[in-house]
Length: 544
Figure 1 (cartoon, one colour):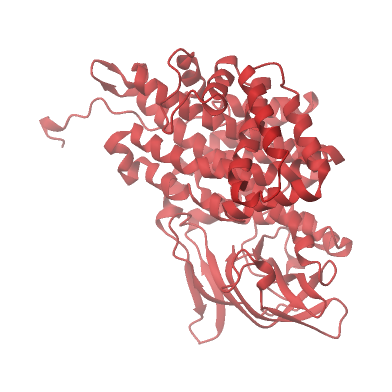
Figure 2 (cartoon, helix red, strand yellow):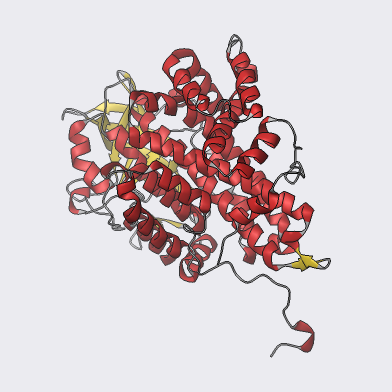
């Protein structure tokens, strides 16, 4: 029985039992904008169902359980046989099963699939971000495999199936499979061309034996992996099945699981290959070109994952402040707190709007849209993922001491927030990739300028930012030292253009004033006080 001094008052109720999709006005608007009208009813109903799952008490509990009980490596069975298996908490399997059944690996097989899947991925990240890794890898493996029509015909139906089969069995006996990826090695890191894993051709055409290691192997419990190794003709992409067609285990030696800052529910491993059977994907010596489609897709997922984390952090902060009272009123009504919440909400909406626009470019598939993706994906990956950590930290601060306590969920978001900036190429890798696109692919810059030009004349601060950007782009000699500055401007101008065209005027005005016009500080909560901040905050409020 509670003591008389422990009556609980002035605490926000749990943010649970609500539709995470339908209460995210920016996300709903983006889905409606980028899908054909004939798909609206079906897609909105589907995403609302997923949103209710994301916000349910049960799924939120699964997320907490999966995070609290990280995977465990089991190298041998009781008899001493090498098994190299990863054991997960049951909650992990429930989450991953729901993600697969929701179509989060099936974007390539239905109309508007990338927009629908992007929205779903953004939602599901908010339940527990860890299981996003195998969902992302499996989704992203499709473009790489399509460089080999025979492999694609064999594997793609299982990759895109809405069936989660956790058993390690030959892939041809499974209705659905998961994929992982292994690129980096101890001595090379992001410089994948420095890899030393060797690939020796076998008698059967297109098959090889791998010897070497991978310092980071994503989702080691998967059914197959795309890896890079040095073949006689140079760096080449290979498909490594976990179980061979005859039912025997491939040589896939898991040395240890990484002990990570965040992403605790997910397994990342160091693996060794020692006579490991593999099938070549694409031509010898063209490994990077073959796997780059997978990398681009996972980089967009880093943008979407960060947007999801930001959205959940902002939702928690706004929800708390709408219920918590201090100094004679609700926190949400205090002008200074309102400024902080509005600033966070603008950052979140800009990330969501950009992520869904890039997903729509995948659905379009035209030459212009593919060119836009070549420049916009690394720029967005650079900028949006870097904004995630400060958003999560500031949102935790909005809850005060409550936000520093594990039970609030904010510490998990804070730990998760740097991940997407590091994975799939950290900031410098993205910045250099943008420079390569600018130097080698003029269509990419043309597509970008066409896109941002659609908003010219609507906001003088955006117009000035476009002019300044053109000045920066006019001189790319010795640009590497200022690459981050350039990529940041590319991302901000693109976000500004999208918000000016699609967001409510008060959201676009606040973004352009603070991010493009210089009327804002280095910390959140420094927006010009004359803007319509109350409506910005209300737009971001999750209605439970």
